[in-house]
Amino acid sequence: MINILLSGCNGKMGQVISRLATEKEGLVIAAGFDMNTSIQSNYPVYSDLKKCDKKIDVIIDFSHPSVLEGLLEFAVSKKIPAVIATTGLSSSQVKKLKDVSEIIPIFFSANMSLGVNLLIDLVKKAARVLERDFDIEIVEKHHNQKIDAPSGTALAIADAINSVCESEKEYTYDRHSRRKKRGKNEIGIHAVRGGTIVGEHSVIFAGNDEIIEINHIAMSKEIFAEGSLNAAMFLHDKKPGMYNMNDLIQSK
Image (cartoon, rainbow, N blue to C red; front, side, top):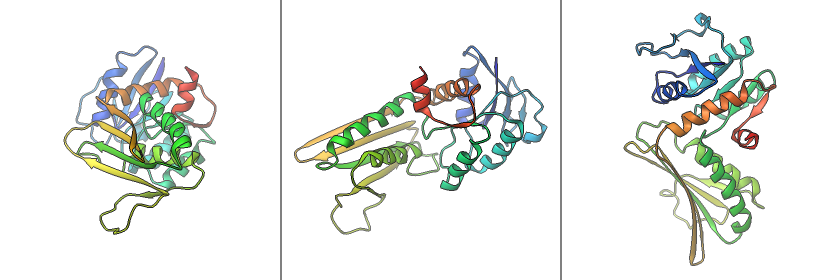
């Protein structure tokens, strides 16, 4: 049995993960970590990691970037693998993850959905073929409570496209203040925030008289919760290193 410490357990995603974990064999949420301890769970919830005395095999973090440093210190001190599913991390925080991965296994993905990661693979293949003759635009849509924009997934898609293009692309986030035509080496990235949209990502390849569009629509938060639990099961017996959804997919 894999014992999980769930960071952000009383947030919306944390509650979904907690519910799905009760239906999954081979793992259990042994403890939670959250500044909000008012919600009752069937496991102890700590606001101070130093007080956590439960045996923990893997950490799942679905919380806030501000929590990351303390969480990593705890993980390193206890030699506990960590699945980092929190979005909006800074470049310095991502570098910190890479540094820590030399000591403990770290699983980090901008999006925990299997479908999104397959979309990334598809758009890379499309970009190799269409780069020279097609303009590329990315549109992402999320609920009105999401803090970061553009989404980490949109940036991951743009980076994936850029990795296979012959010439480096420039990311353009806003055009209303730029009174000039679109540059050939641009990837436009656009964020929509509204209502309860779980998550939508569209990659548009616009050419002369034809458009190719590749989409992914998340219908519920469960796909991200399921992905994080699968990542925890994948990670718990791994050697130190950086792992991502591609590693999980290839292991199936």
